Image (cartoon, rainbow, N blue to C red):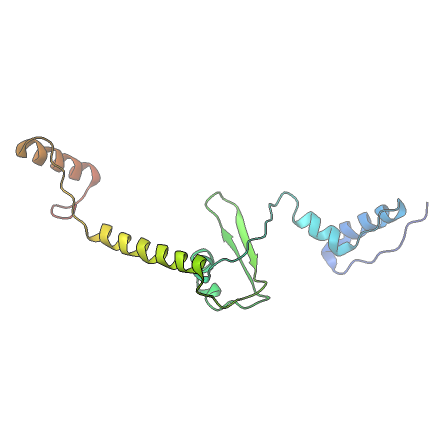
Length: 151
């Protein structure tokens, strides 16, 4: 059996080049780059996400996403499930104030307003009588380690 000669592009592609030669001898054409990419991504979930807001990318990747342009690769960023996320910015589009965008803006403004109201709200529960309420409030504060007058 005659093996085609396929040269590796760098020091770490020897396995991929060898595999490409063996596959080529059996009629399966593949490039070293494709095999190396498959090996590097083995077991990695990939997906295509579109129309992500810059704020969402900044929340995940931090400052590097604030001025990301097309062609920029962001990440890796660790996800809550222990995995990692890498994003390739395909395009940056100017926002258009259509119904969908208007709804997103309204929701974000409302969520920020509600979060601010929650931060400044003081809720006092009433558990039947003033002495019982005071006793339960003190117990909850001690359990949560909340200083008097802050919770």
